[in-house]
Image (cartoon, rainbow, N blue to C red; front, side, top):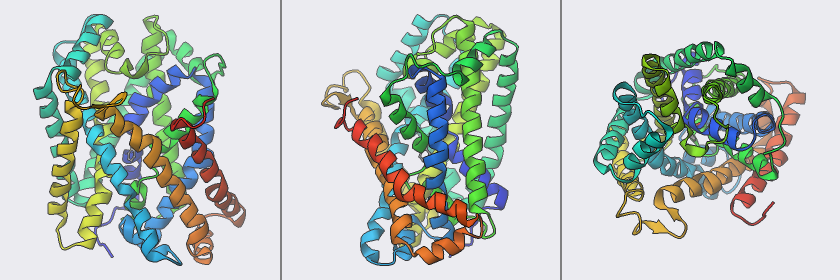
Length: 448
Ligand code: PHE
């Protein structure tokens, strides 16, 4: 049993820190824009409620009940075939694969903090050039900021749950929320705020298509950090009288509210300048910097605050992605936490550097496999395949293969039998079926 635990509030902050990440501030606004707004948001919210929270609670249960790393947790809870189920605990490898490119994006963000202070691009065309130069030509500064980001993340994890992870989240999360609140209030003074509001909350079926449902489901997993043993691992370090259902709901609500806040701010700025909602992935790195420029000195302040908030969101998530691998090595070998952190980080840096190179001119051809660069493959394989598989396995495992009496007894300390029945139905049937569909579609087996 580990003694290094979160406090009650510390757990909620850290789990929220994990959930609130680049997914909320960078990805959510652009996929919402690309999928037409209101209806997409509605489907996304429904998915969080029907699928996301159930899986979140499931992972929390596993960590809470065992207090162990993910591999040992599956082994401990399996009624039969313990050795076989152990393999399911290795979903943290997905997390590590995601981390190697997630940190690349955090590196870009750190660089954009500097750009925001010194030289915001004055037009969208210039902004595009700045970003493309950074991405395809500027290897040395990309590597520099990538390494700086990894150093912060690894140092935090190496310090342990309470002294490292909890402390870091206690500083970064409130700051992030304050910055976003400030930006939200500021954006309320614009006429375009009401347009942004109705864009997010008023159903518009025009751009909505069947695939949008699947995008929403995939994003619900990504944004709640589920399907890769991250929440399981954090939960294994929680205080024993934490209410796992309550904390799961609080985290999901916080995560959703912050995504919506970011959406409101970003669309207000976009609509204020007369832009369309669908700007694709370049929204944050290309369109926004050029729009911040228009505000003059205020723009610099807005841009710096925005990128700091984004960096904080990314760093607290990245920390949570590194933790499961470190915990596994720490608990199952004689290697210390500090050493485990640095060994894993070193491996990820190599992987990250290769995928970073894959975007650089001159190397990109050699590192292109089929239609995608290595960077895109990392992203695609982890979020389209491994993450949903991880979610389904976890749900089916707890729903069918863990001791059902103990499960019911434990869960009914937190929820009524009726609610328990609904949750069980969700992890047994809704999750495998719903998420299975996402995967099949993403793999291109079904075309809508
Ligand atoms: N939830 C984080 C985000 O929204 C990403 C993440 C995924 C973190 C998986 C941990 C595990 O950006």
